[in-house]
Every structure is written in C-alpha cells, then in structure tokens.
Image (cartoon, rainbow, N blue to C red; front, side):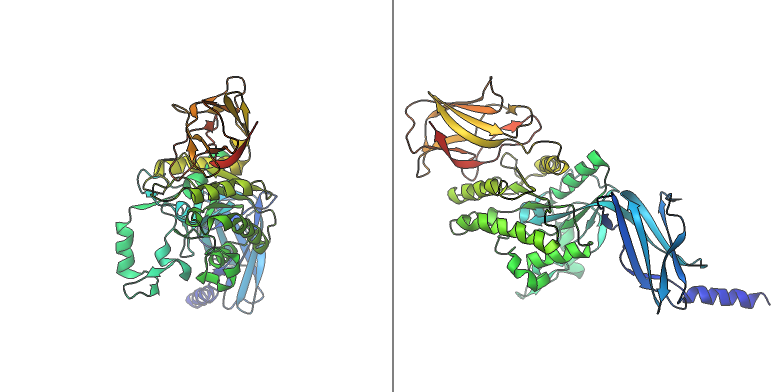
Length: 475
C-alpha cells in the first residue's frame, strides 16, 4: 500500500520539473548598479504547479549566502514561472537555485557573477591578433559572452568570428558565399590558430586584481573594419551590421554595461577617409550612448599605434591627431596610446605589450591616475623649444635616448634642426628640444610622426605620450 503514494510523488515531481528558459545562464555576469548589487529576474516553464510559489536561494562555495536562503521569490501561472532575486551583491561565483514550494526538484544556474560588463569593439587590435604565446591564466572572476552568445570562462582568443552568432562576422567559403564555419572545418580552423591574443583579457584581469570586482567581457570587434562599417546608420540591419550586432549583444547581456573599450582607426588612415574620421568617430560615440540609454556611457579608446609599411604617413598622423582631439570634445571619454608598443607583425600589438595596454586601460577605467602626458604647447626660447605636457603622473621618463620629436615645414617635410631631446631638470613635465640653425616661421612640431616612429616618452605610471601634430611653435 505504501508503494502507490511514493509512485504518485515521483510522478508529481517529474510533472513539476522546472526549466530555466531566460534571465540567467551558467557563467553569466550581471552588471551591478549604483548600490553595488544586481536584480535578477529568471523565467521558465513548469507543468502541474499553477498557483504555487517559486522559492529561490543563492549559494557561494557551497554555502547559503546570508540573506538569500530559501524563500518565496515568484510564482507559477499557466505553466510559466518567474522569480526575482533582488539586491544580489557584487561578487561570486554564485549558484542560483529555484524550486516550486514543497518540491525537491531544483533548477539551477552556476558560476554566476555580479560585477562590471565591458564591450570590446573596433578592429583587429581589439579583436586581438597577438601571438598565442605565454597567455595569462583564466580567472573564476572573469567571464565572457563569446561570439556564439554563450557565457564562458574568459580565455584568449576572446574573439572567434568564423562561427559567430551574427552574420556580419562570417567569411566567404570555397563557393564565394558568406557562411558560418562549422563541423570539421571549424575544428581544423581552431586547431591551426596561432594568433588571437588581445588587450581585453589583460585589462579584465588587472581590474579584478585591483578591485576584486568580477568582470564580464562582450567581444564585438572585427579586424580590418572602418568607421563606415561601424556606422550607427546601419543598426537596423541587426546582425548583418557591426553596430547592430554590437547593440544586440549588449541587450542580450542585460542592456547596461560599465563601459566600452575601443581600438580602431587603422582602416581610416588613408587620404580619402582620414579627413572625415574625427566627425564619424564623435558621432559614433554619441549614437552609442543614445541607443544604449546611457547618456554618460564611459568610453575608453586607444590611439592607433605603429604600422610597418611603405605607405604615406600623413593620413596616419591625421587619424592619430583626430583621436587626441576627440578626447577633449566629449565628456567621460578617455584615450590611451600604444604608439610606443612592440608589434607581433607589421601592424598588430605584440602579446607582451598587450598586457601593458591592458594596464593602461585599467588605469583610465579605475580613475585613480591622470590620463598620462598630454601636449599643451610648444614655445621657442632662444635655441630651445620647450614642449609642455599636462596630465603627467609624477614626472616624464624615458628608457635610453629620448626620441620621437621632429620639426617639419608646412608641407610636412622634416627639418634637420633638433640635435638633442631631454626632460627639463627644472620642470619635469616639460621636454626640451635643443636646435641648431634658424627656425622657419612656418615650422610645426610633431611627436611620433609617420606610420612607424620610435618614441619613448612616458610618465612614472607607465602612461605614454600620444602621437600628435602638427602643433604650432609659439615664439
């Protein structure tokens, strides 16, 4: 007689099996709010439990989190259920468990984090094309929404375009058709990959090291892309446009993010596109803020670095100088540079200096340091040109012989006038250029001119002086 009730209980439990269908997934990172907490709403389906309450609890390291023991968090109606966890504090990893009241059947998501979400966007130097050598170890506090829309532990390479969820990232197959790579071809492609280190993971690991706050990365970059390809005007194409795909993924991750990390501009450093770059870049930032509903969305970007190529340097200089200007034109926009970084090929930042770049971006995002050296003015004093910098952390420093400054005429031709470059002893935020001969009236100053300069001015926090010019030389 006792067997029948047990069978009925088993059937009832099976009929009430909860399914989580939206709101949370394993390894997901939720953006914390101003109170350093997140509210999480989870939904799903369940049979035979209409009218019942849904209970929820949170575990950390196998123990119930204080204040998040089993308690009513939602209800069931029409075969659907929902539950809300309010005020989950930043941290983790957490395990979220849900059940219908009185049932032992539990649905769960694990390795959930509450912290900060960061978008990675731009072209190849944000996508990451550094050598896959001596990579940083992953962290339980850094996860990534990979390009297939699956939350995973963050590891380099973060970007994998060939099988991304969004069509805009796919490449042409042997038939010349845009197609998603899959099956054996995908496995072979992954096995053969030797490039893919980027700045995103070093940045995230550095932020966690400093703050202890978990990080979620949203990779969206695509190598070789121009500002026109990132145009907000293409957003209605959704996953068939870079901007539309990025917006979709931001919304998929919850709709709000801590900020954007951006590295782009190389594809616009040509005679046709460079003069238009500044306005396009500024409009891009403004549109992204409007479309995300975050009017003051923090935007951190990298001034383009070096390019070893037989190509005109003028457009490259123009894009770099435009990037420097945009920083002062919009609020909550911050720039660092990689013009002093080593490369792993003719244009891509090397794996070693990607770690340096990650630290520089973290310096900006954490907000405890100044931006790094910013040119203010150049003044002729006798046979010395004094180049003044602001935003210097400590004093200006350099490894080896200071280098990178040049004087040019109005046509951009270098004038052989400077015989020594040094940091002023009296003013450690000033570089002195000792010159010989007469300085022409139309002479202007550059730092890091051309596509492949050698520059080495930094401050004591390791923040580098950006490439700039032309700058008027005051007399």
